[in-house]
Image (cartoon, rainbow, N blue to C red; front, side, top):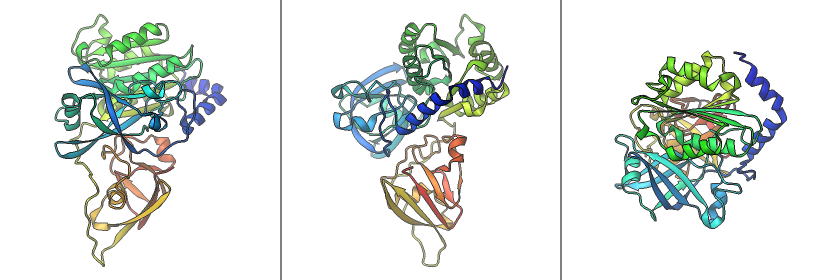
Amino acid sequence: MDAGSSATRAAERGSDVERVAESLLAGAVGGSTAPRRRARFHTLRVARVRPLTDTAVEVTFAVPAELRGEYDYLAGQHVALRANVDGAELRRSYSICRAPVEGGASGAPEAATLSVAIKRDRGGRFSTWAQTALRVGDEVDVMSPQGTFTSTLAGLDGGHVAGIAAGSGITPLMALAEAVLARSGTSRFTLVYTNRSSLDVMFVEELSDLKDRYPTRLALHHVLSREQRTAPLLSGRLDAARLRRIVDDLVLPETVDEWFLCGPLELVTLCRDTLAEVGVDSAHVRHELFTTGEAPRSEPGAGAVVVIDDDEPVRRIEFTLDGQSSTVDSPLAANESILNAALRVRPDVPFACAGGVCGTCRARLVTGSVTMTENYALEPDELDRGYVLTCQSHPTSDAVVVDYDV
C-alpha cells in the first residue's frame, strides 16, 4: 500500500482540517462554538434507564435549560459520574453514546438530554449499582463533558473514518459514526465491532438503524468469538492474523483518514501494532481504554492527611484552577501524586478514575519535572505539548507548577 496516501489527502484538505480543528479547540458542537469551560460537577436527574443487554444499560440524564451550555459536547467525549454507593463516594467515567444535536446537548432546552452506556464489570461497585439500583428520578452528579477522542473530519466531504471496538468500547464510536455520517453527504465510516456472541452486542438496534440510513457509507462488520457467522473471517477470536486480514480486505487502510480504537488494553495494543505493520501513521490513530486489565485502584477521596515534620524535605506544588493559584507542600518521603496533594487544599480538583485511564485530571506542566507512573489517556501530541495526568504524576524537582485551566 502507499503509506503516504492518507497524509497526502489530509494535506490536500489543509485549510478545511485547520478550520475544523480550530472549531474543536473552541468547543464546537453541532456547528456552533462555545468557549471551553473547566469540567465541574452538576447534579442531574435520571430521565431514562434502558436495558441494552443483560449486563448493560443506557442512562439518560435531563439537562436543565440553565445548564445546557455546560453540557455541550463533541462526539467521542465522556463524562464522569459521582454517586454515594453503600456509604462511599465513587467516581467513574463513561463515554457519551449519542451524537450531539445541532445547537447543543439536545434539541429544545426543555428536552435537553445526555446519555451514557454503562456495562456491568465483574465486581464493579458503580456499574452494578447503576444497573440494579439506579431509577428514573434519581439524581447523580455529572461532570461536564471532556476528552479528545474526537474527529476533525466531522463535516468534511469525502473523509473515511474507521473504528475498531470491543464490548462497551462501542459507546463513543456510536456517537462518532453518527456524527461523521450525518454532517457530510460523502463521508464514510467503517466499524469493526467484536463481541463474544450476538447477545452481547450493545446498541444492536441503533447500529442496524444507522446502517439502514447510510447503506452505502457505513460498513459494519460484527466479529463474534463464540458464535459462528456466515463469513468465516468474522467468526472467532480477534487475534493478530484475523485482524490483519480484516484490516487489509475489509477496511482498506490506504483509504482511511482517521482511526479510532476503543476497548480493553489488549485490543487497543493489538490494533495499534497491526496498523503500524501496514504503514498507518500513528498521528492518524486515536485510542481510548475502557479497562487496563489491572486490579481496581482505591478511591483517592479528598486527599490523604499528610503530616510534615519541620526539618523534612518537601516538594512544593503550585497549581492553577479556575484562575486561582494554590500551593501545597508534599513530603519527599510520601511520593504522593500531584492530584492527592492538590486535593488537600482544593477538593474541587477534577478527577474520576485516578488510574491514568480517563484523562479527567489532565493539566499542563508549566515548570518543574514529574514522572508519570501510568499513562493510558494522553496521546503523543498531548505529551509533546506538556500535558500530564496529575493522578499519576509525581514531582521529581523541588518545585512544580501545573495549570488545569489550559
